[in-house]
Amino acid sequence: MALIRDSDTGLVLIQADWPDCPANVHAYSSTRMGGVSLAPYGDVNGDAGLNMGEHVGDSRDAVRINRDCLLDYMPKPVTFLSQIHGNIAVDLASVVADQIIEADACFTSLPNLTCVVLTADCLPLLLASADGECVAAVHAGWRGLANGVIESTLKHMRLKTRAEISAWMGPAIGPNAFEVGSEVREIFSRKSHKHALNFIPNKQAEGKFFANIYGLASDVLKACDVQKISGGNFCTYTDEELFYSYRRDGVTGRMASWIWIG
Image (tube, rainbow, N blue to C red; front, side):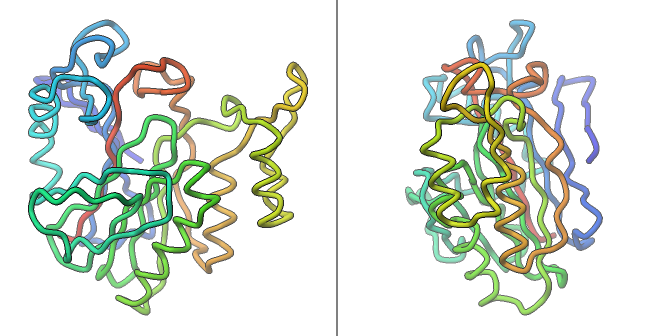
């Protein structure tokens, strides 16, 4: 992981340079720093921010400018999904211009076609095959994880390539901040007894647990024979300078995480 800072624009990006990513595959996550969005979509100092989400109440013009700020790092065409916390993964080769796609993951085997998801605490998961011929971006909040969004995406990717697939976990809420109820723990425990290990009781609140979304995703990936997993060392909730957080702020912006074949 490397931070890219543009001193002229204030833009700060995370380059997802995980060790198992093929050389022809490029991947990034944005932060809240840079851009033109005003409060509450700005940066932590009250200056303009890089909100990438059109659906959060920000000016559409500001979001358009913010997205244009990333054109050096995000080749067009770009399809932004209408994310619904489900398990649908769409092949971007089948998407027509300006089509509204309700899905939580996208994949492609075509070069210079950007797979992107938006998050502000949910887990953005980027996937790449070892032969560099298929990539995917997954919006994996706890509901998407429970609904099988990772399994669905990998199934589609393996119809495109027989090569090994590796994963990078982008900025999400950390395991010391992600409080959930016992019903969430029960949902995952029914899926796998191993999942229960990713829930630690909150001693200050009866019936509440701290969930490790990185651990849950890692367990799912490994069960799907994805063994090379990187990232997972962020916390959007506690790192207020770099990240938007819905849990922390309520009305807030969204970061983008994206990947493409060069």
